Image (cartoon, rainbow, N blue to C red; front, side):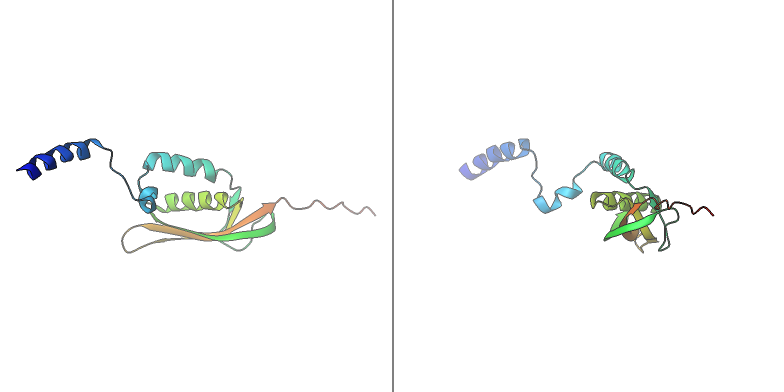
Length: 127
C-alpha cells in the first residue's frame, strides 16, 4: 500500500519535470524552421557552386574538405544544407556538387568545399 502511495507521489513529480534528452540525441531536438533559417544564413557565404571540377571566373586557392549531408526533404534543401556545411568549414565555394534521392525518399548532397578568389588581373602588354 505504501509503495502505491509513494509511487503515485513520485509519479506526479516526474511528470512536472521537463524531459531530458540524451546529449547524443540533442541535435535531433531542434526546431526545423529555426534550423532552416540558420542554414540559409550560413549558405549566403558561398559565392559559387559547380557540378564540374572547375569554376569559371574564379581561381582555386585551396581545397578545404569533402562535405556530405543526408536526410533532407528536397534536393534544394540538401544543396542549401551542403552550402551551410561548407561555410562552417571555412569554404566560400563548392565543386563537384552531386544530389541523390535515397530509396526512403530522403535527399543527400555531396561536394568539395574550396576557397576561391577572383582571378589575378595581369597587366596588358603594350606594343
